[in-house]
Length: 336
Image 1 (cartoon, one colour):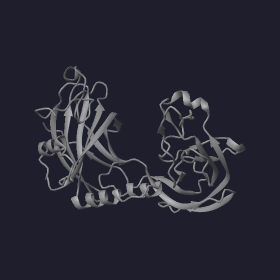
Image 2 (tube, one colour; image 1 turned 90 degrees about the vertical axis):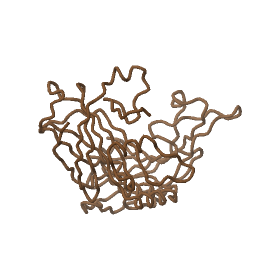
Image 3 (cartoon, rainbow, N blue to C red; image 1 turned 180 degrees about the vertical axis):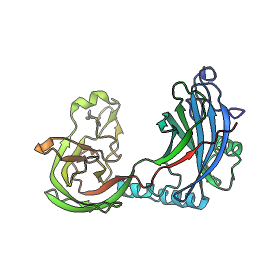
Image 4 (cartoon, rainbow, N blue to C red; image 1 turned 60 degrees about the vertical axis):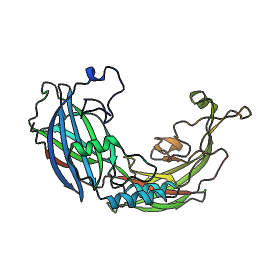
């Protein structure tokens, strides 16, 4: 950690490992904001803006009650391994990991160059070290150390010809789409129909299971993977339709079950095929639109997690990708 408080453009909270970082990333000038924002019962604060000829950096945070954070951590530690429970728990995360900010000049949006985040907790569990950088951030901004905080740092590029012009600037808080678990489905392996109700709009859908196929990743994928590892290759594809169709892909199927993790090869281990577009062996199920697959332009496909041997996957749940809250926009008070 640096001896003094430094913020460089186009780097994260931890700075850069590049030897030319201090030459390449100009030390920015700080403009304290100290703007408190109440948004859907959450306490946010715009901390400071930092400017240089290349762009604008904004630090902001959410204040979290320590009890709420502790309760979430305890529930997370007790969480079962199924994906359905994980998605449900993520919706309760008090650190608001799905919230980001945009910067506007009038109605024109500045280009975002990414963001980073870190967390401060007033109580550190036994055996864990304190985050010195998070404590430095807390001290720099004069925040109450009895609360927990999630700090975020966002970078934006100046619009051409308006470098370090602070007029007409505003910040918009918004939430990315989140995954809301819906109906639990037990598949028989044959054609089935299920009635769905959207959790926010209440709109009714009919989900039809058209076909379930066993599949195995081909040897071709192996050449792109780590040759020292052995990967599970077997999966099932569930083909289904929605009526009415949901063209934006905001309704999908996901397996409740966990796949097999890759294992390191020994001299006697035979070569296995590799994980491809389906994703991690024990990660969430990927769902994608197939277009005209199976002769139906509206058919979709959900793939189960990968296993080393063919394994019927019958427990699934519906995932609704929704935006739970309206954006909130506030003018920036840039005072040096």
